[in-house]
Length: 344
Image (cartoon, helix red, strand yellow):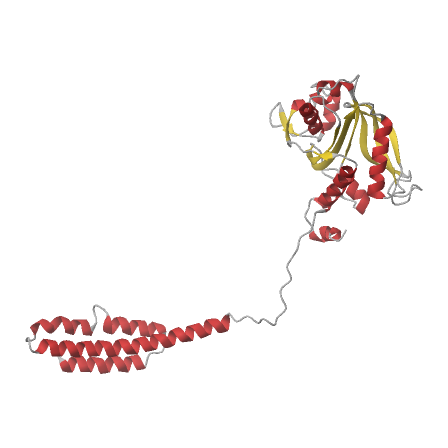
């Protein structure tokens, strides 16, 4: 048995010396030290030895196992070291290389123009108020002097969820909710920006979803001249001190009298050009004095209080200010378009 153990040791060390890969090393570990290996088989036969021979053969077997394990451990250490070196070489970072520039976003041109409009009106003492985009028919129409059979509803045919719920067609419901919340208290001086929805065909100047900013002022002795002065100050802050406005009679169910507001063309200074269709003026928003019925339905005595309201689309304001010809450019997320406004 001693001779078998010595021969096994010689054979194992020779094969280990010729190992060329991690897999070969693992195979030899199983071959010689595994449960079905020759060393285990020899040890199982020690029961047939005499009491004097067992400790001697046991010592020899332990020496053989120890010699094989020592060589395997040394080989394994070498393979681990080599693997570490290969990994370090593959993952080396050249700290002298220039860093990769980070891609930094910017404010969307529509958000930029909305913030600019908000800043102008905040500077005039207005407060920014927001409301729900899914609105009740009452607040979207009826409380604004648009009963269910009113023909003006056809212009704002919208996306209905139920007969009494719809996606709001303007931000005017925010004005009604604000007036109700104030319970007749004055002054009211707010603007209400937000998304609105109308069933419309998308083209270069229309979209089924767009942004709107409306304003409302209520107090005693509010006159049409206050409306004109406020809007004149606004457009001069937005387009420059040379800008003029004109008010043209119009109709809105929630204001009386009502007026469309034009600004002098910023391209030609009012002389007439392609942008203003040779008129010298460009329509920018609608406005008017709050209708007495709207005041009364929201808790204000129209004999004691008056007010004015106005509404504009930031897309149109931005198109005029930045010279954008197609409203759809604001929504297609084309970086070539959006990058033009990064430094404005």
